[in-house]
Image 1: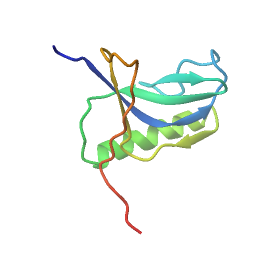
Image 2: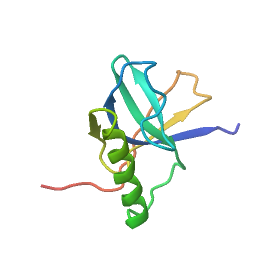
Image 3: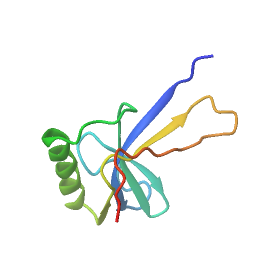
Image 4: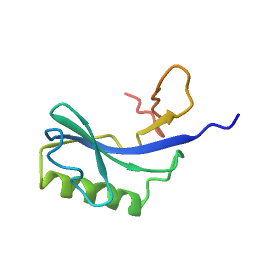
Length: 102
């Protein structure tokens, strides 16, 4: 049986009351929880190279969002994968492209 996968790229978390805004930056949407909202966009569930275009977009989204609200930036490259056909409900996993060592 085929599974459908939805991935979201997380840019950060903003202080936004539910229903007050649908987006803080062009091309993104908000996933609301009480007085907070995750700034996300649909994205392929793959590890991408962190090159200038990706870094520029990340910074531009954060700059635009911060012009509207207080924003806690997310680390680069977090993805959330939700299996639509999961029998146990929705499950989220994160994927990191790099590990930091002390």
